[in-house]
Amino acid sequence: MHTLSLSDFRARASEMLDRVESGETVRILRHGKPVAELVPIRPETVAGQPRWKLPIEPVRYLKPPSKSGAELIIEEREGGW
Image (cartoon, rainbow, N blue to C red; front, side, top):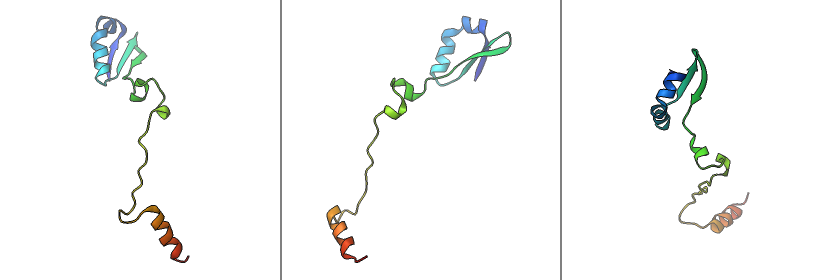
């Protein structure tokens, strides 16, 4: 985290934004007290949607390659439980 005064921030705003863009957090002080933090944007807000609305990869179930799903069901039924 990089900390600087408000006057330093005003003089070096472009440099500080470059730091934030590269993933660093910048804290701005006024009269020695923290008043703001610049943090990088999280990936879920870049798309403009909440994370729960982003597309997901479907779950892929693995089954034995030698038998189909129907064959596995028939085999289990004939097992006699």
